[in-house]
Image (cartoon, rainbow, N blue to C red; front, side, top):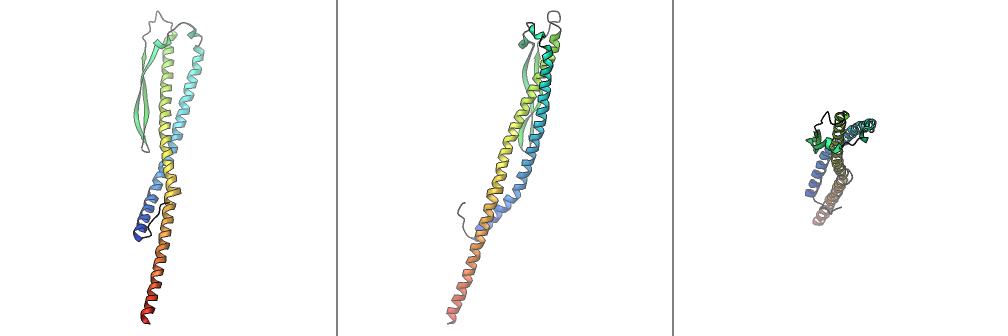
Length: 196
């Protein structure tokens, strides 16, 4: 704890600091609650997308026998990019998934197996789900990082700064009260001496 001056100006400064902390703490607590709620929402969405991805992968198992034919899957479809937008949650800038840009190889309907068109659709859906999951994971990472920082600030205010200010105010008031009492006592002694 830093050494403080036992003056009226320091008392005023400590009271102002305490007032500031008391004013900002509820805002930080609200932000913390918003971030926690947002993490829960992102987790729910992540679980849904992961379940959809797992289900789509399960659906591909029925196709596994078809993949025994020599087909260059890498040339069937390729991910060109993921389009995202930006969002703001409690002051945190996060990526928001829009869509994926996928390039599908043109298929020669006479030279290629008929199921390749459906395979392109299935792989395209998997790529889109995977990209959305990655964007949601990034959202969660950014929000969690901000929640950690906000929680540290809430703890700093609740457990350090506010109690420290209250203790400083108490000590300054005691000191100033003792000074007033001592001044009154000195004044009475001086008056008695002058009367004698």
